Each structure stands twice: as C-alpha cells, then as structure tokens.
Image 1: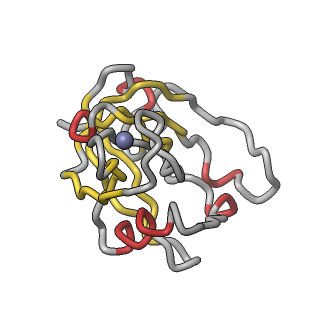
Image 2: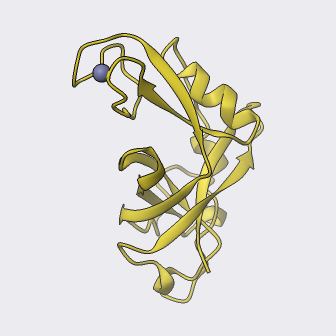
Length: 145
Ligand code: ZN
C-alpha cells in the first residue's frame, strides 16, 4: 500500500453545507481562489470562519486571496471503505495543511496525486482545484516538487 497513489476524496463524501460565514470561502473556490478570512479590526486570520474574532471579538472580516502554498501539518491514510461504493476511491489522504501565507492558520483538506510513501509532516504542498458534481470546488493539495 505504501506505493499506492493518493486519490481524490470519494465523491460520496461531497456534502457541503454553507452559511453566511462560510459562503465566501466556497464562492472563491468556485473561481479557483483560496480566500482566507482575516479580521478587519486586528488582522488575525481565522479558519474556519467564525462569527467572532477569537482575538478581539470583532465580527468584521476581510477575505484575503492567497497563492495557496502550504505545509503538511498532519494527515491520515484511509484504506477501508467506510461507505459502500467508495472502494474504487481508496486510498485517500485527509490532511491538515498549515498556511504560512495566512498567518499559519490551518485548512482541513486532502492530499492527492503522490505516492503515500512521499507524504511527510512538514512537506511543502500547493493547492489544486477539484470541481465536483454538486457545483462546488474543493481545494485539495499536492506535494510541491
Ligand atoms: Zn480581531
């Protein structure tokens, strides 16, 4: 399994719910832009988007588009189908990616298109875009060469 290639997350998991705080993130993703919320009062980045800044309690937000370079903070490899019908999507790699371009905030996503043995904590990676049938676009990450 170590030489297997990390696949895209199963389409069966494509269930995105948005609200007024998260909708700008998903709308930017449809344009293939990685937009991260930053407090308009104190400039603290916060992911996921929340109604109140944890630093100053402001509700004002700016959405900052970043290039999308990250660092693998944590990951796991899924090798068993948790829902019937996703067997062909294995293995896939849910991951937490740190975003130095956004104050070190972190994004939960997936790593794709690399051998499992190449993935390490601390590895540099970059965003790639996965348009899915629901009409949304998922920001996924590939290891940087
Ligand atoms: Zn703030």
